[in-house]
Length: 355
Image (cartoon, rainbow, N blue to C red; front, side, top):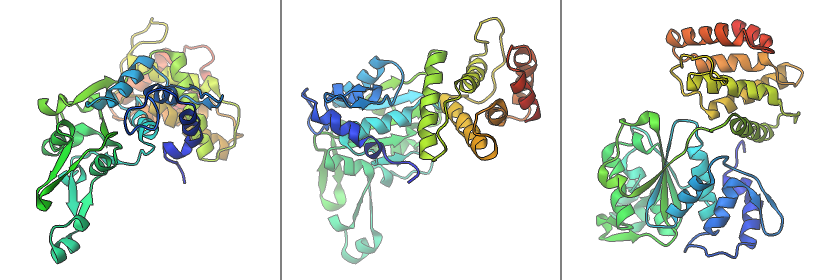
């Protein structure tokens, strides 16, 4: 498999945390809230097993998110694209329920059946409405099994589909009138939804639905070193998953990619001396990870295995120049006014000019 689910990839860490976890666990939880936070942020299990950090950022944010899931409020992870909302939701589900697969991907075409339930129409026509003909949605399965359900891109769902969650989240039950019955949520059930700031206004949440969520905003990494650390860790993990040869991390090139992304994203050079125009894209940490991973693949298969400026230049240009007119102007101005004059960046300047 190209990528294993979190509960499979980190099964040894979860098992070690569970074995030494003597704190109070909410009903239906595999770990206590404190152990879930340790799993997300890294640390050490009681038996000394190292726990790798899955999220690098504010501890308090993760504590608030975990505490929310221990109440009757659902959790909404909000932030710009690339701030690890999906990543955090997957690992929270894995640590709490031992299952991160109960997922609904929100799109403009997602039907209400994806949230509530559908029918096996062959059985429905043959036998009429019955439990055997019912097709459970991931959210309904989470309710009946006492697990965490996940809804990606909540604001992309049509408003009427969004509002089908209200009864589930407020009454903790889902009526099934065709069977003259209902499904009641077992202890341990809750829901994590994600939405990004750039999509506000696509399908705004109704006030009734928004009240059912506690919102946690995941920010972009605050400091340069923090973002470089995130990129380096994720690139190393992806490199192992792709079975690329392990080489010493090219921290200088990673720092250069992150510097470019941060400066263009913030509209200001890191020294604060030069104001810059920002391109139309988000230039998120996730995109920086993608650029470095692609560069590593180029260096491995078409170079000497060492990540160089020429390997990342094309990826950076592709991330920055989304609009061939306006973004091209922003990129050229940045190259000529900042990159060309920066000590030690001549190799990147030449590579970017040719990309």
